[in-house]
Image: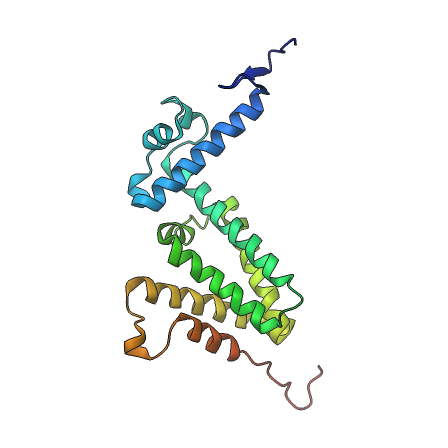
Length: 211
């Protein structure tokens, strides 16, 4: 078979385009960086270490990422996006009540902190002026707003949504720091999340106001 200049050959002899090869390399680099982040935190993620873990040339990471900050920002975006996908699926569960769906979404957020604490910290350390990071975070926030609106209505969703996100972040932080011992407080994470969601009640409109 004739190979055009745009084609290249991978290690097992299969023919792929240069763009496919570049995408595969980038994916391998991101995966390697994610592993290093889980193992040793941001300090363990260097472009040289990522390239070595991914099994690519020393210069390959620099062809995909400007610097370490750029790579870490991509990991944060991936984490926001993955969690948004999870929350979107939870909201689509018509067999669960609105409150149960919201509880599950909050627990999914806290679950990231539990299982991947370095990733969780990175999500909330992403630059607020990076448009890609902002869009990824806003997508998750919009999913939470929709879940909260399902419980209290559109008019009250923003304030209550901020309360839920702040509460979830606080619960996650307390547990990570070791200051949420059941022996001390008599409750665990699941209990607190249930209390947080159960506390969301639609406010009745004042007399004389239009609904």
